Image: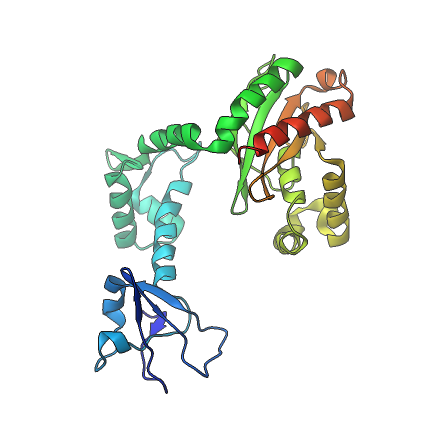
Length: 312
């Protein structure tokens, strides 16, 4: 495994067993930024034991990534196969998947075989599609996620009172996805309904989540995406815009995601950690939205978000 080198160093390293894993400390006197601690299972260690040393005096010198990082990278690559499928790419051969993802055919064959064995993919005449296990996982998520369980009755009440379409949106990694969608008086045919990934910097649902991030995290996010941020390519303007959303307690967007629709959203603050990873939104037609006092409906949404946050 190229990412790890096992070589003699000035001082022996003592391996301390903790259950089935062994933790190796960095050699004394070594302080390279590329050196890290490695937490490895016994089976993972078999390929990097230095000859001539007993197991309790192994010498492991990590120069790039630990074996567990390497294994996680392989898992991430395998799961990335699932991300290829969309409304425009509903089925693909293993060869086409390998070409699109840049994997060798041997690697891709192994990945699709593993994913199919657990029902995440199914094969039809040599082409693969998403499998029924995903629906089962979705069902379990709806029944077990405390935020969703708390949000469902709250959003239903919001929809009954206002007539708007209700959404719950959640952040994972650097993507925001709608995880709950409750239709209002009208079926608005939203382009970003449940299961759709939202733009990070468009729409009230995303904006209230992004605005709540810490300044360092926002700066890193801005640096990576500023070329696609239009008027907010300037960091200072973007930071001030986020601060304004935080101070107001909600955000409003008009036609940013779907022409002819107005969205208003409030952040859901977790009671346990105080962080914001989700939002609650209402979507209206413009002629419907003008019937409300903006500040009043903003207050209603903030109170709804607080009730949901109490459960998380």
